[in-house]
Length: 203
Image 1 (tube, one colour):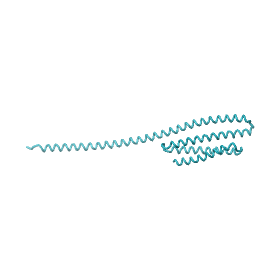
Image 2 (tube, one colour; image 1 turned 60 degrees about the vertical axis):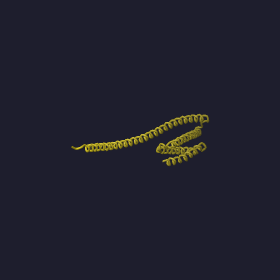
Image 3 (cartoon, helix red, strand yellow; image 1 turned 120 degrees about the vertical axis):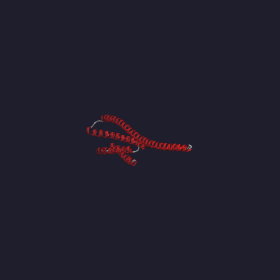
Image 4 (cartoon, helix red, strand yellow; image 1 turned 90 degrees about the vertical axis):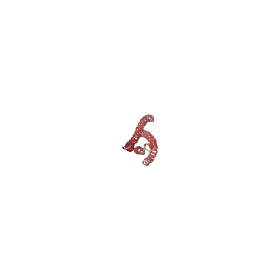
């Protein structure tokens, strides 16, 4: 199971490195190449999200006692994914402003104001995304705790059943021993009576 996770992990590292490189190149490309590069990055971001989902599924299959390390790695990868999306949004905003200015001839001040407004909206969206991510993490951890509790209850039930079986066996053995002792006592009393009768003189 962990080998599958590590395979996805390597693919994610390679893919995010490519995305980072392409995002950095977007502002310096000619308009036609920029459009193609933006589309390419969008596709790769979707692939990266799918890899994260696969990794998340693999983590859920790992035994609870070994899952903590993988959860920490997943949090780091999700943060990295969030940063990539933020950088890409900023790159696209700059690209969109540049295209609009070329088409409409907007002045620099108007472009800067709109860019600032868009960046502010982006930051609000990021904060909302972080809150959703925190809620999702709490849900995952709650599910893990529930699974561990169910496993512990199952183990406890098995222990109780085994203890009941041993108790029934002990009761059966005690009953058998009691019957044997009772029989021995009866035979002992009968033998004693016969012995006493043999000592009585016969007229």
